[in-house]
Image (cartoon, rainbow, N blue to C red; front, side, top):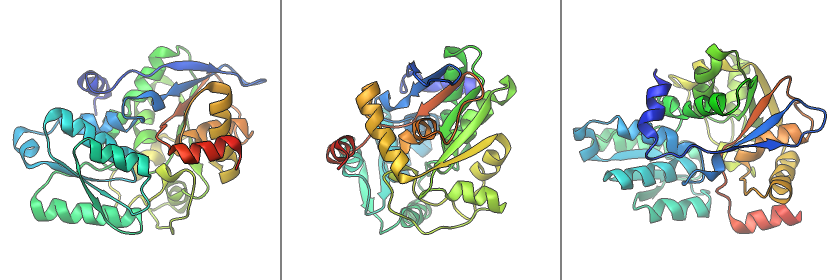
Length: 310
């Protein structure tokens, strides 16, 4: 895996996002890596761009298919549109309407696949097999993981001497990629899960991929399973994660509200779990740290409710 080459490859399609200081009294210097400012609103464009740019001409001509709860689908749709590739995105029925509109606006075909994220995964796999379409998996794909790892390279360059990176954990593509990018630099990886979307964390505890019922959560971007036949992200997460933290719904809601009020940042629930860990006191950095705010695609009505505390 060559994450440096991936960074050069995706640069025309994925911005270098800024880091800004976070006031965290009594803690070592801490910064926010603001992936919510990506032009698709999340880090997902990095992995999608790397995967699609590595397709050959024949694969591009057939089009691609992806399953997504929103951010990955938007990234695939927008990158595919810019590269002239047809894209089909399978989504669960509860997909965030903001993300659904963005997928549709980018020109992708949207397939509503059922009540759960796992149904979207199953439908995408069926279409890939039936129509011979390359699949762009949101996290269990080495090209996607390689692309997500570019976040880690940027953090290491932007913050000389950084000692740990605090990263949202869902299917594990972002954590795995960042971990691979920074592990030879002596940088620790702290993975933060939402309590109601913690299947990767629970799987690692069990020593094997497991399934859990989907629960309603404000961190919906982190929802969904990791696949019982997970080939890559489960094993890589087991190798690169140094510490796990789990945060609850109240702390995530508070973090979205505080990010808006104090940092002037629009952050979705899944993107705010690292901030939730810090602001709730669930985790305190042990050295110079960066916390990844992974996405900001949140429905304005939900944001208003969270900001006002309704």
